[in-house]
Image (cartoon, rainbow, N blue to C red; front, side, top):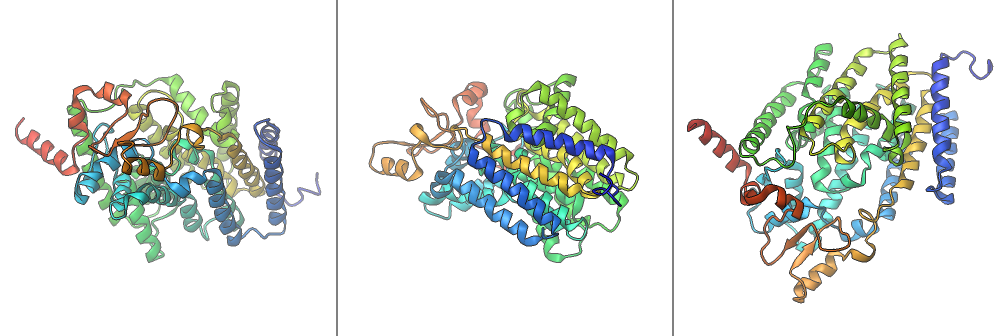
Length: 498
């Protein structure tokens, strides 16, 4: 023991945390849901990473190889999506349907106010489809959404260059590709959920970027801030984090981020104002009361999903274990006298803001999928950043990377991935329409029975799901046939004529 850790600053609590991660790893790797060949692959990757780490060979080429491997894995897992394309839920039934009979500018400004926000990321991707034949429409949004989903990993890789130990920086960038909270099937390559990846990307920019050392990177950061802030509140609510960071570092570039934020607040507040005062918000948004039990559950699940995989998300015992480990991590951070505590404050502030947003704006109280993606990823940065600062942190990170690989074994839901008996490819559906055998295009998710999400090509109007129509009632025309300009004009007329 003395030989192994001679001249090392690794602490006893650190060793205990490593043992906990190892036990978690072993518990998951022997699970029956993980096939033999996947176990061999995951153990092999872990062994290779440990050897490369020992030889100090984890470099930028390893990250590029991991990125390519991740893309190949996704294509192998869901070939029908990447080869044939598909629209997902509202993406096809509402946004794409609207674009078929409206101008390009209206498509870009389209705002279904039922959500309470303007979704620029989806509008932009749908707009791109209008420049191509209908055969390629869903392929365009699939591949554009895939590019957006890679942004958190790529941004971290770029923005932390020369800031963190290179070995740890690369492993964390690898983790962000396979991280369970960024791989929920509900947010998988569809434009309506690109907002989650943009939210995490904005968080990474606010924590690690905007230093203005490279003009191209600065332009790239501002473009992402525009897309993120005009696409959801996930990004918009994080601006106070950047202000606190600026108070610590006055050299940060603030002009364009501030302009982007003010403009985006104006846009999103207008949409929210219109939605709220016209009773157009879906579900119980803004009616949820602060529930301590639900708040505690959010904290537990946020840390659990990335440490124990999505498979154990509803396991109450693992939830409690996750809370204990989170408290241990916080204790280690507080006790560590060499690390900069301000970064951890910014991460915790980001998480708190996202949790407030979820509690206020979530429809229902089920913390999973799109609702869990951003806060869970942000909270896990506590552990990732801590491990990037301590000796032997790369060993912990390699085990976490292995756990993220294990998570891929639990994503076998035919509801989202495999077409099976109830799916018809985009090409086949178009052929059926052209032959006069069908009038509708069905969108994913597809299951047994009548379709929930579809477009009537004879009269291609926005077509919400039956449960949405029931909730909306007679206001369907109001909430699904408006552009951003319509909303702003209406709001100012209301204020002028109270």
